[in-house]
Amino acid sequence: MNRHSDWSSTIQQRLQRQQQQQRQRQLHAYAVAGEGLLRDQASGQTLINFSGNDYLGLSQHPQLLAALAGNNGNNHENTVGSGASRLVTGTRPEHAALEQALAELFERDAALCFSSGFVANLSILQALVRRHDVLLLDKLSHASLIDGGQLADGNLLRYRHGDVNDCREQLQHSSKTGLRVIASDGVFSMAGDQAPVRALVALAKAEQALLIIDDAHGIGVLGDQGLGLLQQEGLDQDAIPLLIGTFGKSFGLAGAFVTGTQTLIDYLRNVCRGLIYSTAPPPPLVQAQLTALKLLQTESWRRNKLHTNIAWFVEQASRAGVPLLPSSSAIQPLLLGDNQRALLAQETLRQQGLLVVAIRPPTVPEGTARLRITLSALHSEQQLRQLLDALAKLELSA
Figure: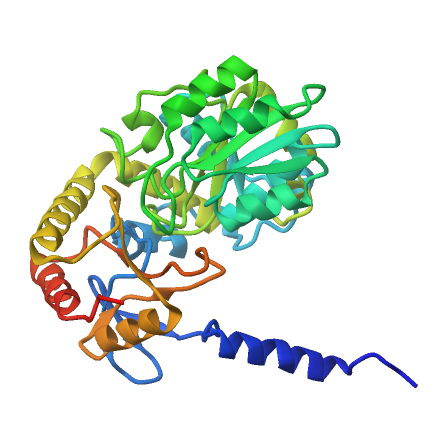
């Protein structure tokens, strides 16, 4: 007799467990309905978007739309797709121009572009961390860093969130025969706080470890020119040899990049499976990415407006007794703890025309479900006030 469950029953049971734990997710289709506004295609409801990562509001920029449509004077050689991977025939003039522009903008030797931030982190860590090597990750690292570390052949260690002493102790007790790598988010995506990068730099130098920072949520937001946490802290390529960024947040597009020393970029170009075995990003998208780099430099008013919104919202939330987690970034979480409470708060806000998505485990640790509020340069003070008034009326006590 066959003792194995039929596959359909097994999957159904797993899905039921998701439902019982209030972890089931649904996809909602949204259409842009104006600056900072989305329309739910199913219900027709227009919502103020406080859950996206379009921090500078560039996703609706007419120059990016024109670049994607090929209406900016570049016809992309009459090609939509690149037609091959980067190391075959997929590298086009746009790719080369973008990587050169990134290296110059971030004042690094070279750059390499990927189809997404998840692919970049996954393949970079797999390429660097091999047998007998050690990788140390912050406990709250993004899923892409965690998965990359788990798929790599080396020894993966996790240190307490933001705790450089714990990182040091684990590093000093680890093998010293192979490469040792420390990797961390710059700005943590679900908490909005910043990594202690200066202390990590000092530790990496003392222990001769390679330090990698994924600044997906810092680039575009932090620093005098919007170049991220490393610019804010005055840290150069010598301090942090590999910097990972994304076009899917502040740049309003999709895709990712890594910048660093020439040796590291040359190595990654030759061994990163996510680059070697993936079709190159389409030239129109790359042209839009180039355009976004220029807009970051020429439209600083967007970053100034975002910081004005952040400062106003944090101050007013404190006055109203809304207990946000400490964060100076565009990510302003409200910790609720219980999944049901977070879902109820999400629905209550939605009924008032406010889109604030509840974040639940496993995206965040068990017992730390939250509303992940994100601010944008597109938000008006009236919209922020509407959100704050609604938050102040929520039942926030356990």
